[in-house]
Image (cartoon, rainbow, N blue to C red; front, side):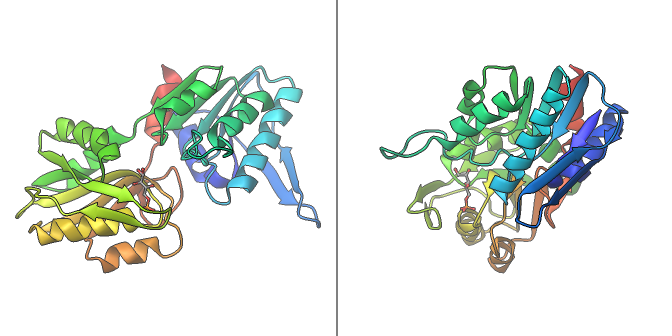
Length: 286
Ligand code: R5P
């Protein structure tokens, strides 16, 4: 049986359809003082798949996930697989400055303590987050799905990573498509400000496809798009796994002259056109 938390109901339904499993409804609401109420409505089996992204509002979605997991565990469900399509707090996976909380580690421990017995994530910001779990943990990649979307829609793409950290994604997609790839050099000044160095990239007359794991404020993409246009790209298409899209990020990206933005449905957004349901379902069946 599949249970979708508030953040991932639609995706949970799609996964249920892929697996031909029942989707169990949950009732989730608030008490007058703001505290959360959860009730799982439906017949329980010995195995459950819970789907919940922990993006904005992160703390609310996490609390809901903890309540669902602990509830299932205390009802005697032994096998609780948890799909976390977007793993919130994933960018604080180590102590960058002394005294900082390693949020990703704390969250991982709490998810496990609450009752998870196996974890499925998609393109974690840092692969090392899997090490915080003591239970089997899978970090799936949505790059094959993104590559297939590019293949169906573009004739002459070149894949561009907006920073070195995304180079592996660009290579993965370019290898599938048999096209060229490159990367730009980015320096993050603050959570809101990034600088991207102008670098010679061979995109003249080509459809440049930027690939990143996350688009948050959009600063990284705006800079990259500007450079690719300056170098004569015929089109600039932006792709990402997790469309976090803080405030007017999408508007900033289109205002920078980007032709299209495509993302997966790990988070719901106006550009979540690629579903990760088949990827998750295939991993469950392995
Ligand atoms: C950084 O390491 C990530 O891969 C993304 O490039 C980053 O999260 C994007 O952030 P923003 O959209 O705020 O520039």
